[in-house]
Image (cartoon, rainbow, N blue to C red; front, side, top):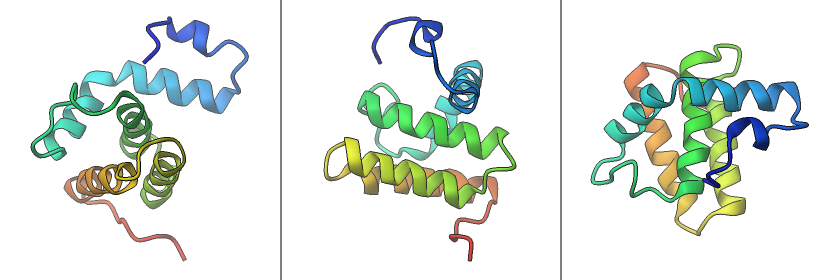
Length: 112
């Protein structure tokens, strides 16, 4: 989003944050393909940068971090979108991430 190198942005970041950002960056083509395939009527470039970034991290977790339950990834992404994006962003993010989860055959109900 900023055009700055990822390593500059991650200076001083916690290990978990660094792992998520570097992992999403390493799998960017795969992640963007999943988002685009489930963002009917939208291209990846048309999605607002912050929403796109939020979904990239969530999809990375869904695809590559089995220890993070899919519903947690979706809930966190929707919560962050609600806090930092426009009023329609949470529903948009939820819709795309839920579609990705269904495609992957993963459970989308919140853990009890």
